Amino acid sequence: MKSYKILPIWRIERLKGGYFVLWIEDTELAAQCRPGQFCELKAPQGIPRLFKPISVFDVIQDRVAFFIKTVGAGTNALSVMREGDLLQVIGPLGTSFPIPNNKSIVLVSGGVGYPPLAFLKKHLPSSNQVRFLHGGACADDVFPCDECFTVDGSAGIKAFVTEGFMRLIETRHVDLVLSCGPVPMLKALSAICKANGIKHFASLEAYMACGVGVCHGCAVGVGSKGDYQRVCVEGPVFDADDLNWELM
Amino acid sequence: MNRLKTRLGKLHFESPVTVASGTFGTEYFDFFDQRILGAYVSKTITYEPKAGNPPPRLYETEAGLINSIGLQNPGIDVFIKSSLPELREKLYIPLVVSFSGSSITEFCAMLEMLEISEGIDGYEVNVSCPNVENEGIAFGTDPDTVFELTQKLSAITNKELIIKLSPNVSDIATIAIAAEAGGASSLALINTLFGMAIDIETGKSRIKKGVGGYSGTGIKPVALALTYKAARAVKIPILAMGGIYTWQDALEFFYAGASMIALGTANFINPIAAAEAHHGLDVYLAQRDLRLKDIVGKVNG
Ligand SMILES: Cc1cc2nc3c(=O)[nH]c(=O)nc-3n(C[C@H](O)[C@H](O)[C@H](O)COP(=O)(O)OP(=O)(O)OC[C@H]3O[C@@H](n4cnc5c(N)ncnc54)[C@H](O)[C@@H]3O)c2cc1C
Ligand SMILES: Cc1cc2nc3c(=O)[nH]c(=O)nc-3n(C[C@H](O)[C@H](O)[C@H](O)COP(=O)(O)O)c2cc1C
Ligand code: FES
Image (cartoon, chains in turn orange, brown):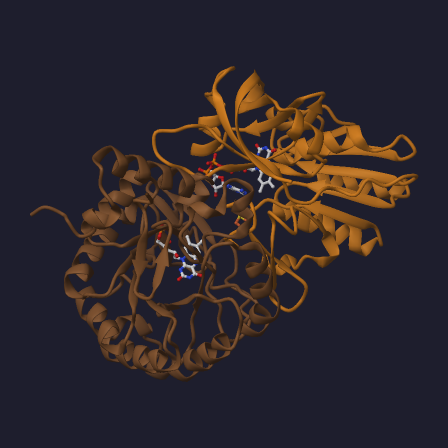
């Protein structure tokens, strides 16, 4: 069950390019978080602001980590917090990735889509064959994975991660793709998977107000009838075949 | 002694704190005891199911939130068959059902269906939607339409009939008087204001629909002024909302003339805002040895 807690920051690690990792300690939360799920986080601020949805990046014993990119007011407020400062946390929220056995799996992430897949990779049973592809705009956006891609060529291979994925499936059989990243990337990946008969689950991002399912603000298009579902409850992980990419 | 007891027309409540339609669900009862709420106001239902508006539907501004949910809901049939029994199962507090129609006939048909359903204590009539019979002008902006609609609805029910007014009008007092004359037992105000934000990188509106509904901190002074004006114009009680985040905000609305208040956007900012408001009001009144009714409408000057 989700809970609302105010927890001290156990550790904060600053990384390159405005990225940082924020750790909190909570036995109950740590026991519940599954790969793909997220928490709503908020730093105490002068003016009242919304919580920010952030994926679970890691769980080690009683500790939960979040891997965050500073992009605007909310993430900026989180980035200036210090160890011991109190953080407001609602979670864990949303659906999780499927955890299969004996499959050939490719994880594909773009930008801040990295954290949920890095967490998932740790959880996938060793009976699976797993390859983790990650792409970003530049060297600052890439993190440990099996193969990385940058748009400007400053690290890894100069290409979109989706191009890297196309090349990979030419040489290797793939049963399942699990992905997270910006909508254009997921849309392109979805088209490739569909054309090649590969099962694909994508984790989506959406602007959120409540994060718990009451406001319907985080809607994404599903099916062909112009219907919407909530990223915070029915997602963030969706079967990509169910999504209506034209409505994104 | 419960200093916080209050009343809206026909209903008595243990707490003057409630929640604004569309901004709350039983999901929040994971975070606090529902009994601190006087009542539960459900999200507006419409006759037909509504898929809602295309995303993005939300944008947070410097002072509040813009939304264009588009009244996404499963329609009255599904509400009555599944949502209502589920709600009644979970609630220990009175239930106020919010509904909206696209014509007076549709509003009346909906009320008749709700009247024969179990477990509803009162209604909040959302008149902020476009009136198909009146060239798409929102019901709530025309006093004659508000009068006619309220009169027809009050003939159908003996339960609490709250008419929820739009702030997007030139004179709230005229609309409030029309609702009272039509037989409303109380008023709720305010619904969202029109709001917009533009991404200067792309030149696009932050909300797919262009203009959305603006709520939260920035609308509090407007909501307070409209509550004050409406309270002076009518005798029926007022359920006020608009930018109420704390017990201090709530007190301003009671002084301005509200008998009950609702938290909307505040629930998203602080999921236990309602519990904190309830506690803060209780302490404030106890310290002064006052009851809520001693301060309602007692703004000085
Ligand atoms: C389920 C989920 C999991 C997420 N996990 C992570 C994570 O692990 N690490 C991480 O760094 N970020 C993650 N995000 C994205 C993160 O929530 C947003 O970057 C953050 O909300 C931006 O808030 P802000 O106040 O800093 O920026 P704002 O000032 O709100 O916005 C800055 C810019 O980012 C855009 N933006 C804001 N919110 C979103 C959003 N939710 N989706 C897409 N664009 C947005 C705005 O339009 C604007 O252009 C996740 C989002 C979701 C929905
Ligand atoms: C996301 C969202 C959804 C809303 N949905 C409804 C609704 O379904 N029916 C309604 O009458 N008002 C709706 N409102 C308006 C609120 O009930 C309330 O009148 C308004 O937000 C002002 O209060 P606040 O500033 O405390 O949020 C909605 C507001 C928001 C922010
Ligand atoms: S963010 Fe409110 S329903 Fe998803």
